[in-house]
Image 1 (cartoon, rainbow, N blue to C red):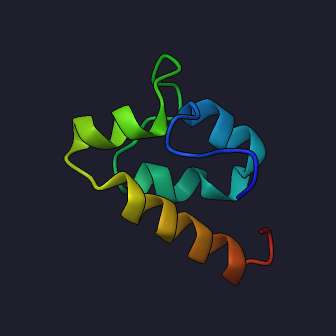
Image 2 (image 1 turned 180 degrees about the horizontal axis):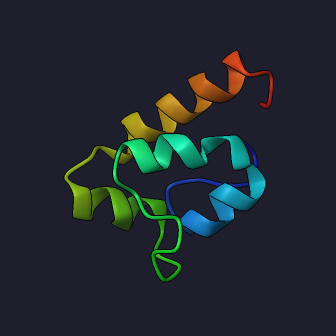
Length: 66
C-alpha cells in the first residue's frame, strides 16, 4: 500500500486497487464521492479509517494484489 493512504482520494484508491471497489460499496463508501479522501469518507460513514485500510490490506493480500 505504497501509493495511497488515508489522505488519498477514494477514486485514487480505486484506480490503484480496482479490486477494492466491491469492499468500498459493501461498507457504504461511494467511489464517485467528489474526490473526498478516504479519511473523510470514513468519518462521514462513522468508520475507523485505520481499520478500513487494514481490511483493504488484508483483502489485497488474500487476492495477491498487494
